[in-house]
Every structure is written in C-alpha cells, then in structure tokens.
Length: 319
Ligand code: TXA
Ligand code: MG
Image 1 (cartoon, rainbow, N blue to C red):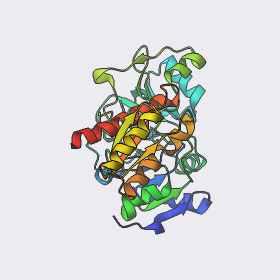
Image 2: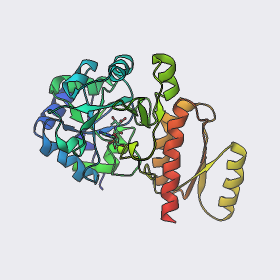
Image 3: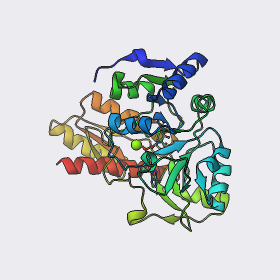
C-alpha cells in the first residue's frame, strides 16, 4: 500500500473536523484518534457505511463492532433494560477506555452486532473524537484502524501506512495517550465479566465501584478474542526477566537472526503507550525476533500481557 499523507488532516483544526463529518454523512470511512488506539469510523445509522468497514479491514462479517457515543447520557439511546452495573460504570468511567456490553434496542442495526441482541458501547475520551461526534449528531462504529488481526495503530501515520488512500480522511489527534484497546465488560450477565483487558482493570472496578467481576470463559469471551491477534511480522518471544532476555538476545544474534529487546520494567503506562509503535517499528526495520520482558500482571499490565500472548501465538501458528 502506497503511503499517501495527503489525506491526513490536523484534528486540531475545526475545518478538518467539518470535512470528516461531511465524509461520514456521505457514508465514507474516516480514521479518528481516541485515547486508546485509532479507530476506523463509519456512521452508525447507515448499514451500508458500516458494511464498508468489514471490506476495508478484511474483517469477517459477524464480528461485532463497538458503537462510540459523544457523551455518557447517550448510553440509553442505543440500549434497553440497562442494569444498575451498566449505568454505574458509564457514570464512573465515561468518557474513558471502558466498553460496556448491554442489551441493544431497535436503533442498532444488525451489521453492527452481527445479529446479536447485545451491543458494545463506549464513550471515547479524546477531544477530536468528541467534537466529531457532537457535530455528526449520530454515533459511529469504530474498530481499530488496522487490517484484521494486525497490530493496532496509535498514530495517524500508522493508519496511513496500513491503508494509504483507501480511507478518505485520517484525522490526526497525536499519539494515543493509553496505547492499548479499551477494557470490554459484559454487563448483560450477573456478575459482569471482562471480555478484554484494558487500562481499567477488574481490581480497579471492584475497588472504586464495589462491583465484583467474574473472569470470562469459553463462549462468553468477546468473539473477536481469537487466541492469535495483534500480530506483527516479526516473531515475538516472551521472557520473565531482563537476564533471560539478554541471554536469548546473544543466542539469536549468534545464529545470525536480527533481534532486539522490549523492556519497560515496571513502567506499565509507558509500556502500553509504546508497545504497538515498537512492534511496528521492528517490522519496518525487518527485525526477525522481538524479545519482550513480560510486565507484572497488575493494572494495565494484564492488558499488555494479553496482547503479547496473542502476538506470540501468532508466530507459533506460522511455524
Ligand atoms: O479501544 C477500543 O475499543 C478501540 C477504539 C478504536 O475505540 N476499538 C476496538 O475495536 O478495539 P475492535 O473492533 O478492534 O474490537 C472490538 C471488540 C471485538 O473483540 C468484538 O468481538 C467485541 O469488541 N465486541 C463488540 N460487540 C460485542 C458484543 N455485542 N458482544 C461481545 N463482544 C463484542
Ligand atoms: Mg482491533
């Protein structure tokens, strides 16, 4: 795909947001910044626009999308029979990196949910996304703006590298502050279940909202949670500590395989922020193996480990 920077517009300019809104109104796709990763947006009320996302991403039909709304009060516009937990979580964490699964109402088209009677909703915390949603006066659906199964984008240039001019507008809102996708919590079950880890952890929800969370198993996991995903071209190897990483690096270099170490120690926020950019950069430089020191399983470290396991599984399936 050729890199075409002419479709990257500065999201800080009001006129850029107007251009993006007009594109969405004409059922075109627009890439938008959020605090987690960049999204590939279509107008939620247009089934034909929503269908384009599956074509451009190469995403299997029936793999449901997240609906993004401007403000927390919009939760009830697209849902019904809201549980107290769903209301409480939206009140506490929106706008922010939490996607809440609720029972959908008739406004939500089948193309979004793959025919399910539930819908995933989130209210992003990024000024460009919020302004766009307010001016559009509709919700958008937005999967991560990468080809299906590949590494999510955390900057406008990542999106341009993946899609070139297949997307009419890429709104540049700078680097995503968090860097990994939102936590997904299913509030249609009692107790609620986390289907995908993100910046907001089960422990945090328990502590701050006194809601106990069940860990997701089997069919109840998000249907998009394939065991391999987030796959760079390089092989990802996971090690427990820096010492092991150094030993492995020497081995690989001795075998003539270009390799490097990703290690952020205990700086989990920085790790999440940099992870996808580092994997993409390793691919650009044709690195064979990225040895990654696993972060501790606390807070956003759980989300990072989840992504790393899937990236490592993707190489195993290539071998
Ligand atoms: O941070 C994020 O959530 C980003 C930004 C762009 O907002 N979006 C994102 O979307 O990660 P995507 O499409 O890459 O991931 C959506 C996940 C998939 O795993 C999908 O299966 C799950 O959400 N999902 C959506 N609707 C669902 C539903 N009704 N029930 C269960 N899982 C659902
Ligand atoms: Mg994705």
